[in-house]
Image (cartoon, rainbow, N blue to C red):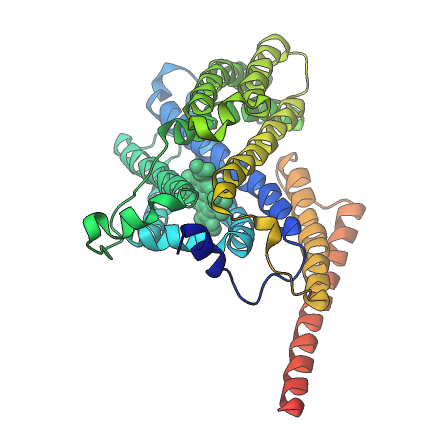
Length: 407
Ligand code: HEM
């Protein structure tokens, strides 16, 4: 039996509840937010450490280190939460690949969770100790924590990359004909891809700092001098960072196997191209353009990266006869309606409320009192949560009773 048939046989016989393209779009779209927070977190963590050891060099480094420590602290929780959505969608349409890859490196897949927990605890230890006049040794916690996060990125990369190399699974499963069930190896790493994706952390925190300087324009505790320092630091990190990322993107582009024809695809070359354009724009306009504009363009680059990753996956898997869009469909309208109304209601309204609240509150020094529109949004968010919980239970109980009656 060839590997293509095996992959198609490994698909969930229940099929998917709506057209597979829907899950494909959602997997690509939601991954953008996951990776945006991966980049922001790793970049902020790196800067927090650098600034921590540079505290004696000037008045703003300590303030910057404490601020970035908090950004990374919140960032980790968001990258985890925002990783769940693409994980679920990937598992729906690429289940044979994702599960095989995870089983082949099971030790690492499980270790990922523990290293993430250990890394996050270490970051909290650093956060706890990083205040004015902090002890120097606490920097070690931060360095170890960042090293673990970088390792987690490597595990994520290997799992994603092994998943698109099905012709090599047997050689990993039974090297030399002897079955190896240890799951103790990361079997495939494509360094140009991994280094490129991870390298985007530097420009991400650079562009974030430029936006940060504008965001805090209303706060008197963030003096104009400190904000100017943040802005210039942002530019200093972002411009060379973008250039290095563009180089690494080109390396990845040249690293694709010739048979895939991916190296000749203009779409793939758009990535280094856009990164260079953004570098030029940042160098020339970091004083004039609003900081949020850079973040918006940066998110656009990540959307292109997410799309390109999917093109790469499709190109690798198609020759084996695995096409995500031909997954068997068993339409399930009620669960689809429930899913999208949850996304719009709980995700949109409750999530939107939190975002709006945090955005507004962060711009005020001292106690923040919600303005009437924000307060109304809060009431609507609570109402939608009550409705959602109600529907969830009523729906479940209705199905349970129906099944009991039919039995
Ligand atoms: C510090 C922690 C993490 C880091 C540094 C990280 C980093 C990365 C990177 C670099 C990739 C892209 C790999 C590639 O395309 O080569 C990736 C993909 C992904 N990550 Fe994370 N990640 C982390 C945690 C998580 C968590 C906790 C989840 C889930 C809850 C998650 C879900 C995903 C998913 C679903 C993908 C895409 C897999 C695919 O479609 O092939 N990540 N991550």
